[in-house]
Image (cartoon, rainbow, N blue to C red; front, side, top):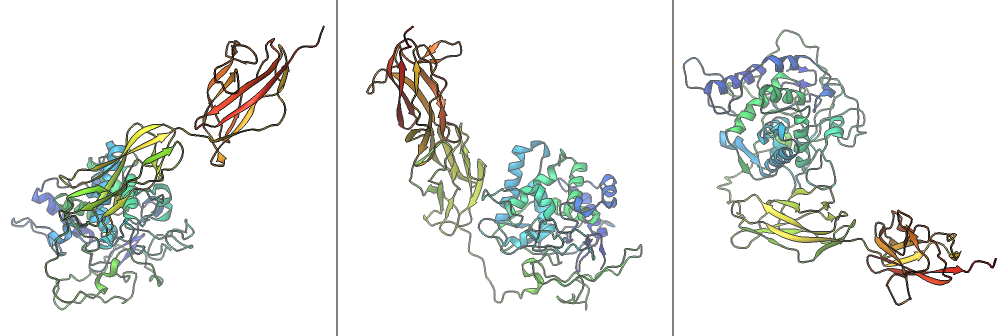
Amino acid sequence: MSALFGRRLRRGATTTAVAAAAIAALSASQAPGAIPSSAGGAQAAADANPPAESSATGNSPYYTELPPLTTPDKPDTSVDLPTIGTGPAEAGIPASVLAAYKQAEQALAETKPGCNLPWQLLAAIGKVESGQARGGRVDADGTTLSPILGPVLNGIGFANISDTDDGAYDGDSTHDRAVGPMQFIPSTWATWGQDANGDGRKDPNNIYDAALAAGEYLCHADRDLSLDADLRQAILSYNRSQEYLNTVLTWFEYYNKGTHEVPDGTGVLPAGTGPVDPGPSPSPTPTPPPSSKPGPKPPKPSDPGTEPSPPGSGGPEEPSTPGGGGSTPPPTGDPGTPAPKPVVKRIEKTGTGTHTAMAGSEFTERASVRAVDAAGKPVEDVLVRFEIVGDTDARFTSGKSVLTRTTGEDGTATAPAVQAGERTGEFTIRAAVDVKNVAGVEYTASVTARQADGLTTTGDKELTAEAGAEFAGQVSVKATYKGAVAPGVAATATMITSADGSAPRTDGPYFKDADGNPLRELKDLKTDADGTLQLPKIYADDTAGTFLLRIETEGGATLTVELKVTAPPAA
């Protein structure tokens, strides 16, 4: 086997020629949506040998197996293609992985409609990069049960990429490794990482985050993936290899012909090696520079008397298949017909609290639903879409207005907390599942104005002025709510006639409006970020005496301040 510029062929894998033959077979079969064979710009891009860092994966190893195909039944047109499992088995995509691809397609249809990203392209890349997250070995949130890491990119048989993340993602503080089900190198993830599942983290090991990041990466540079040239350019930007392009295009065509959902953890794993679990990694055997002389071809699985090399026989091909692969003993006994997956018949609210919060604060109640079948029993692993609907700036704490959660063993899925914005009023939190004839449910939520329950003056200086003059100081107060400063609270300031009254005076101290006219009531005031409210300058008319200024805030906090006006000295 040969290792060339950060990519390699694998034991049991097809060659570039076979991959190209598969493309030809699809075109010859005139299948609907068959990918046209266009080598010009794509081949030039593949042969340009740009730095590995310019690709999403660092040109890390990938699976080169092809899907099962039906060769054209015409004289002189059949091609020798490998048989890899059975069509229906290979067409199955694990539930969480499939949901992540479709969610990414939907998100980009809204944010980048001109890209026309099909989820089948993400599925093709996910198949080639990690065998669909090792056959869907992910938890309820879509995070792989153990990290999926490519080999160390130390320049020995692969690209040489020095560490860019201090080992945060790949556990290697010397060199980078491709990470997660979509195999991003850390430096690329730093730019393109996404938080698609709304948990507040951008995790390359999470299939939802990784699928959306892959979609964003493929769509950048204003690509339109419905155009063949842009599609090929996007795939090559992910891993700059003509062999990689051919393999992804073949799986893309395969998935376009039809797929179905299978339970997580039951997807078909490729027979070749690819990204692996982390662990002690012996240094790969250095690979001699590439030459024009072709190396020995790997034996076909069907060759009689030929046994595949056992795991651990040496060379960089040796890491086990994700999830165990061929090194895992097959299950014993006849599993029989699997039990049918429960079918969701309805979703119901599980929360009964009131969804109310003050502007700028976090809601204490969370929207939660339970998925049940016809017998009322909980249904696990159901993807629930939560959406904030209405004229509001409230968002989930992740900053998103739409996200998904998967039901647990009790059939329940709970949305993250909602952060209220500054816009007051009602809105809706809607929960729905993508199941025919299953109605969604809605929670009504409301945001109230910011409040204060306490007001204090920030100074103890007496406020006095001579009749007809300006007060020496300005009134400044501090608003608090439950002991904490209360920013953004609406307030009014009124010169009142008496301590138990509220009507504005017609004489005595006053403020000035924009035209300089006396004004004895100020509205639409608001405390600043520190909860402080400083009133404009106050002026005295010719009336001497003691006067009252009342300050009131939203929430009922009040404060009365005395203003003293003395008569001017005798002439």
